[in-house]
Image (cartoon, rainbow, N blue to C red; front, side):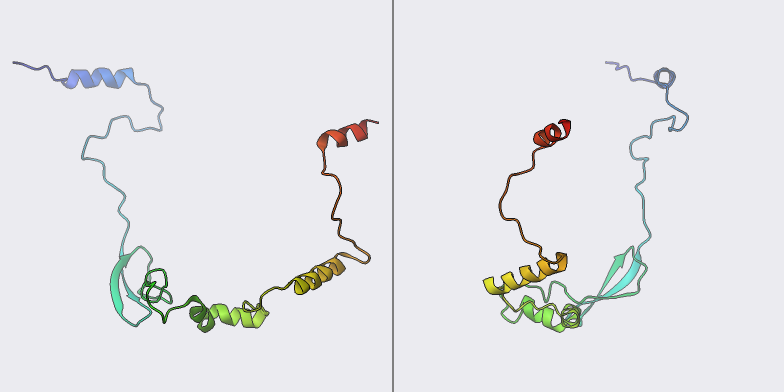
Amino acid sequence: MSSKLPGKGFMDVVKTDVQLSNRRVMRKIGLGLARPAIFYQFDTLVELSDGSVVKRRSQAPKDEIRMIADQRNSTLWNPNRSNLSSAASLAAGRISQFNKRYGIETSEEETPESREERDKALLELMGEDAKEITGGKLFSKKQARQRFKK
């Protein structure tokens, strides 16, 4: 039982039959010879929200990372903990400082009266005697073309 395996002559025939551009690699990369790209990893200390420190490897060249929100104080990872709430986390952080500074209030619900007042204020911004159009026909390209042909 002799099996014919392709030898060097077979590879020469395959090489000459294939015409590749000059930019490509001219030979096939053998199995097990290709190496994956290896990125440098830095040792990083990650401080979680409860104060515990975990050492991990990261591509970011930072020695220390301090987490504000992580799996220990997230309602997504701890749905049964009653002391965690999204409102409490918003009230204590930078987001609440931003909201206080720029006057964004999340607790106030919008009523129909306040919605009308807001709409009136927007109409005043657009110009004097501006009226909101509530009805009318939809724009049609076909009718617009016919209008300009006349």
